[in-house]
Length: 240
Ligand code: GLP
Image (cartoon, rainbow, N blue to C red):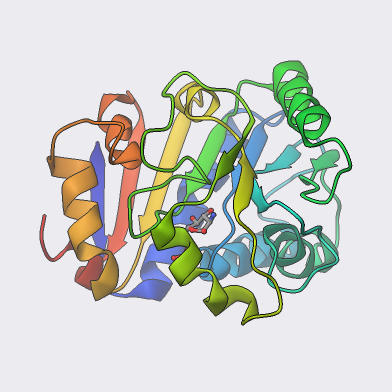
């Protein structure tokens, strides 16, 4: 793992955007994936600025979302898809070549997971996968015990995730399942970027990056990835 400890959230966001920009410069036909959650907002903004100012060319780049709450689509405020729409897709002056946003409201969720697999299969492997981390070490919605070889799948949300989720949409929705890219697909990415900020992430970052590699802490599998950047602000790096 390559650790990058930044002075604050802004620097973390810029460093993450730097890695993504380098990946696209090396592979203009890249397939990229960004996470939902609060952590990546600064990186999204930095990425959009660079695209809109002509520093990054995405005309041949494809984008795929990482995960979604079952029951929600990109029309629902607080969903991962909505976050993608308002902070990325709709504010880009120039579009990606292709965009695949997971629909957690699909009538047939297995079919939706198959569509996600097919998109990654056709355009992949992922050139760069940017990830946040849940307080329990989840990546996307690969919760404790997730299969490290999995492709896209539907998974029950852990207690921790269900406790934390109201920060995204209050009590408007109460999802109990998620749909997510699998750890197998994430591990096949040429480059992985794990970002985290704030004191509340310090414990889980230490367990994921320095603790035992175990499915009980899904992010610990990234220790086995050959090209993984862990980009943190000072507070999240505190217990490394
Ligand atoms: C959410 C999402 C993940 C995200 C993680 C951390 O539930 N499913 O994609 O990376 O949990 O979220 P946050 O960045 O808000 O701490």
